Image 1 (cartoon, chains in turn purple, yellow):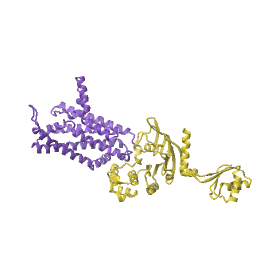
Image 2 (spheres, helix red, strand yellow; image 1 turned 30 degrees about the vertical axis):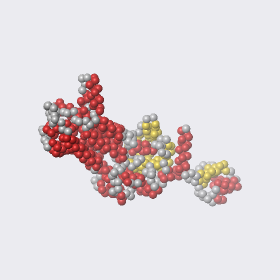
Image 3 (cartoon, chains in turn brown, green; image 1 turned 45 degrees about the vertical axis):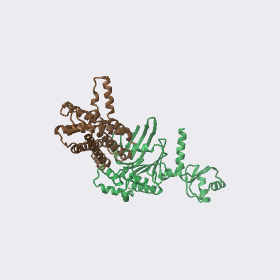
Image 4 (tube, rainbow over the protein chains, first blue to last red; image 1 turned 90 degrees about the vertical axis):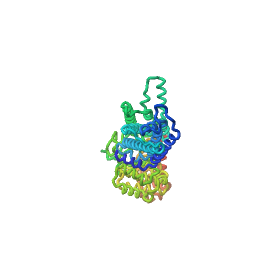
Amino acid sequence: MINLFKMDLHRFKNNKIMYLLLVIFSAFEIFGIFMMKQYEQPMEQGGTSVSSMNASDFIQLVLSQTPSWVLMYVTVFSVYFYMSEYNSGFYKNYISMNNARMYSVISKILILGMFTLLMLVTMVISDLIGRTIFFNNAAIGDWGYFVKLLVGQFLLHWAFSILVLFISIVSRSMITSLVIGVVLALNVPGMVVGALESLVGNINLSSYLLVNTIVSTKDFNNMNDVIHVASVAIIFMLIFSYIAVRYKVKEDLR
Amino acid sequence: MTGAIIEISQLTKQFKSKEVVHKADLKIVKGEIFGLIGQNGAGKSTLLKMIGGLMYPSSGEIHLFDHAVGENHAYFERMGLLIEDPGLFPHYSAYENLDLMAISYGLKDRSKHINELLKLVGLDGSNKTKVKNYSMGMKQRLGIAIALMGSPDVLILDEPINGLDPQGISEVRKLILELNKTGMTIIISSHILEELSKVATKYAILHHGEIIEINSKEELLLKCEVRIEVEVDKASLAIPILEEHLNINNYKVISDRTLYVYDTHVENHQITKVLVENGVSVQSIMKHKQSLEQYFLKRTRAEGDSHD
């Protein structure tokens, strides 16, 4: 297990696409903040203007806007990292090792966790840079709240990357996986389920969907919201990790 | 204990309604170079994928190293695989591809292992070139190097000479023979029988997913040799006549009435003439000559007819 993880880590560290994605993401994040400054609207009564937001508020604002760019980048990397190995056939060289099928999926889940963490760190740094430059405001706010928000969002985004990995494993197609990932990042299923719920009335299951949870603003001082975020993230992570591993273990490899 | 390093029995693989491999049985003994011959689509790759642990059989059993594989896949670890195209990252060099494998095996002295393997397959001079710029032959040799990384007991090579030029074929052949000298068991598939015959010590002919024949090298050569098959009333009477009048010494008595003459300096009519003149009646005489390829085609056609 540890050797396969080391192998994937080696690929991860030497992966130019990963660094490129992070740089592009950072550049667009800072450019987005510049555009916010250019088109900043005066807030209605009770609202908070972007210039007076702390880091937690700002991150919640950025993540709540669909399409979620973080999810888009996570999709691209997740699909790329798995499919580049699958399409090259490199897995055939090590898959006959004992338990390699299971370990290779777990190893990729860990790598996706690392990439998700890097994405969030890049986002936080880029936001701080952008807000400092364009809004002259680098306030973090309540550190406890900020850490809870980041941990919650990290788990949710990691769960999303595992979902995309599962889709890649099952579909075995880069294009199909990317299209499904983008559709999910646009929260199309969440909107459809939400619309159906509004027709039926008095049901709110859609709020427990993964992407809906990611893009909805939560109060991390409220225990119910914290439990909601943690449970959705952990349940999605466990379910999709399990079925991804099961699928890979049973898969006939071409 | 059967003495076989690999033993498969009644191995079947079905994709939806199509049976790609049908009840295959074979035994491979340690140190053999086992050739799997079959036309494109005969089921060679699927059979090798099942033996190598890439695919699960629909039914049947695989025994590796005298143990039934069943749910325990640890025995597959002792195999090095090169099935269909070599699995290589095209944007990495040969060294980097091998390095990834060395990491996955947890090797300590990675650089030493990698350089030894690159030297063994003759790629030591080009370890900085990206694999995407490699010729097919170089990719195949790198694929073999990767398959050898874990010092496997069995090496499975699926069509390793596909797309190679004559020099590449010769190099791969030489490499296979060298590896076999170290005691490694090798399974090699090909649809080019002539080439396979230069390395393999045992052969299985696969046709429409079924193993229709398994031969040792000697048996196969016997079936393909040049000989005159003579059927007479009594072989014991014919032999001294042939020795005395035609100086034939290289022959084999197959039965009371049949003998095979291997001396190539005589013709059918000379044998007939000398036997008849000495009172031995000839029932039939026929020159038997076929290449390995002709034999393979004859066998697969016959099998095809019996299927029809």
